[in-house]
Length: 49
Image (tube, rainbow, N blue to C red; front, side, top):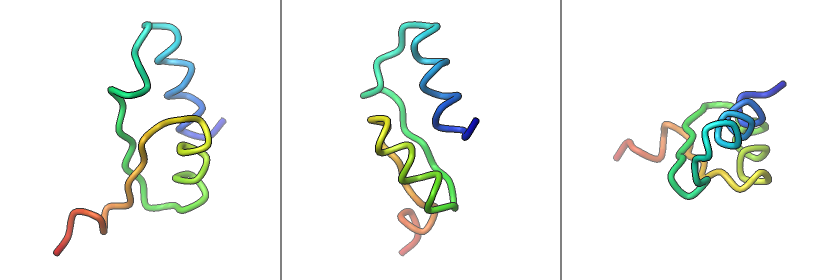
């Protein structure tokens, strides 16, 4: 199970809104999966100027 899938299950279990979750990872495949599941996702380079 990829991390975004785990996060989705966690949010369901604890009744968290996906709009309140932000995911940061350096793997593009994982970021894409998170976005497909409705989780806002960022690459660490998004925070570097």
